[in-house]
Amino acid sequence: MVTMSTATLTTDDVLAALAQVHDPELPMLSIVDMGIVTSVEIAPDSISVAITPTFVGCPALTMIERAVRETLQQFPVERVEVRVDYSTPWTTNRMTERGRQALAEHGLAPPPRFEGDFEPAILLNAQCPYCGSTNTHLRSPFGAALCRAVYYCNDCRQAFEQFKPVG
Ligand SMILES: [Zn+2]
Image (cartoon, rainbow, N blue to C red):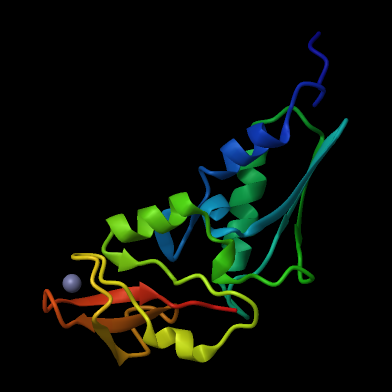
């Protein structure tokens, strides 16, 4: 009989599995790259994962919760716990470099990083994902999704969307 145990399971194994769970609204990003996973705890008979909500009232959270649960059922544990972490605010600074790269590869400018307090004026800055120019201007603060804003590149003359910085 095989003993069910998490003795050899590491946080990296869990994170690697969670990297297969994608944000329903941004299919090119995993929840790990989004910075949604705030903690992973492994106990002898359970795995406990905390996720932080990205946008208030985001309906995707329930879907993500369910997907995390289903994904972690591949591990030999009795219990999988997914809890929503309201004490760690999500900001776009939590997004990984790999996540930023994936956004840029899909023609979506990654959110600019900010230091200290979030200033809405940061919305005015965007780097064109096509030519790399920062000579751009904000055309509309609302793009195809709530999390996106539309810009226009003055150099290559293309419109593009940027994932809005959130702080
Ligand atoms: Zn450009």
